[in-house]
Image (cartoon, rainbow, N blue to C red; front, side, top):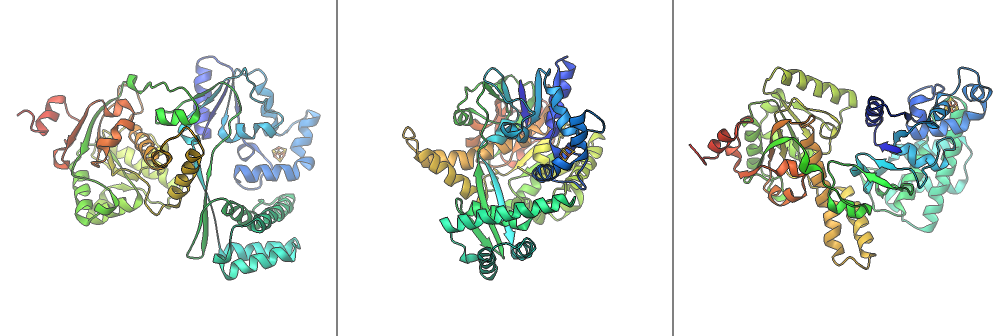
Length: 492
Ligand code: SF4
């Protein structure tokens, strides 16, 4: 069985569970994690380029071939896959497996499990460069004595980025930039340096711009590409707590909904007087959101529809900035972890600590907030209208469905997949942060009137006990059924 997940941390979970069950498991890691020859931390793509440039004169590799130590841990790990019943790896590793000789290819009699499968449904990848990148690319080109045609092309772009027009010639020049970028990366790797190249990254962005929409803003050229991961052919199980029937159809999979059996107890409220809809984002609306946050008197986590909404709420109540633990878009991983830990320390003492992040942000997807007794979603997280990822995704689905003769309303389906379903998945992910163990109880407040319609796309356990109220009727803490009814004025 091949079990693939997005992050190494998730892969380690799978491995721990297999060992607990007595199943022989092998975890396959990338060069970025294992290669002892790297002089500094590198991305998996850089580490792979580094290895292919230096492998033949790498001492660890030579030792491995001669059977002496110290040998290359990256290649050695594949010995363990021979007897393993489960091979666990990140998506990256498996997708490269076709080219990766030591990893046995997935055969038709194997089973492939794709964990957190919502991550593999049409993902967007952003490429960008600035004038400074173009200047660096020109310097690199003179180091490797690249052709004058490329130099002229880069000079023209530097003088006027808007002069770029997608064409066959532009695509050929972009490929050529990538080719020369690879040459430079090889030279750097051979000197033991990180194989980074602006020629390579500018070339990749321009190549993407020949097939996807791009924009130029403040001297930054940005292109968003939609990617679909190609999985090997094998019986496949897609696992996810946040995808539904529509996504299953897209994956060509049968849909089995186990969310009805979840033992979580969510006391869920939809607030009818709040919305983050673009045209209704007034100071008064943000003030109401801030007042809702202040009503909650137990450890709580809140995720806003976007950073713009979060900013609006904090501006409406300046004291929140001092009192709450608030995520920033530019936070590094370590900083974000510290922020979450600081919130947890207070929450464990039962104090009404408040963490505010963003749906789809760091806290809402990767952190466990099991201490939370209340979780608030501040607005429906539809993409901002000017989000380039939205335009790219919509175009991608519109083209995909338009070319399918059996689809009757391609535009409606494109909107469902590009706008509505990603928002529902973000909400399910964010709410799930507070429900990390069986039987967990918490208050769930879906603070946007549009959740009355979106609820059918959310996991069943979230909407099992759902009430529609005004924001001033939301109970301040998780209560008994009776207290909840009293707060609604249903009973006295
Ligand atoms: S062969 Fe050398 S460079 Fe490649 S992964 Fe192994 S140790 Fe690193």
